[in-house]
Length: 245
Figure 1 (spheres, rainbow, N blue to C red):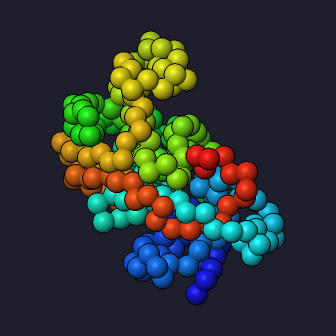
Figure 2 (cartoon, rainbow, N blue to C red):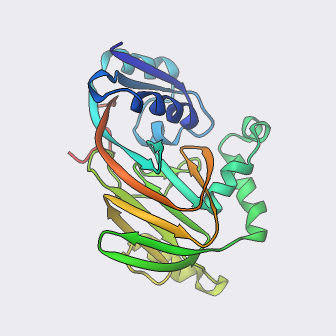
Figure 3 (cartoon, helix red, strand yellow):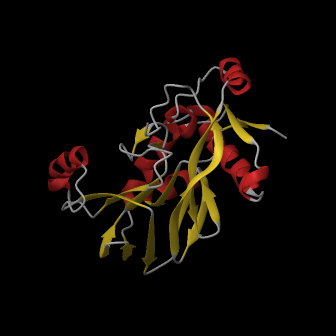
């Protein structure tokens, strides 16, 4: 097989990715995507056409580009891994609500869950630092957006061999404005927001945390994230903004 086309959303693409990564690198077919899901965050971030016929035409005529994939313990992701609050939103948003509201369903569930926001304690280990932290959310991105188009890793590229890590710590209502400024600057050691680019990181929480990989809910007691450089060939538009070149 030379070409495998995943027609669906982020969860479908993730399922196909697991099948591809079970094959040896030499036998993996090129992957094409026709976005038919609720949010299609990965496809939209890659500028793959929303129109199914145009996306299919790109799959048939385009050329494969080597891209990275992310690994979380023994699981794979191509777009993003969200832990804590963001994972809870995706896991608790029902298929019926997604069909009714589309990507706005995640916003509705987020507003409901924010009433009882839970902060997770734990330790982050990166190649050059160890951090003990408390906060509601951490995101590990191979690509840039999740949650229906929200930019969570603005500097991410899918072919640079790095994962982009965004950590949001506990924020009081009076500090929201300062946190918003940090979110624009993306400092590595901000008071409320931290942003790093790294080939790997480990998360050691004090309790098992919900983690969402490309829309698929899991729960980890400890997790090691790694970037696997240029693991698959993906058909992309020539002007894809997620490529480092």
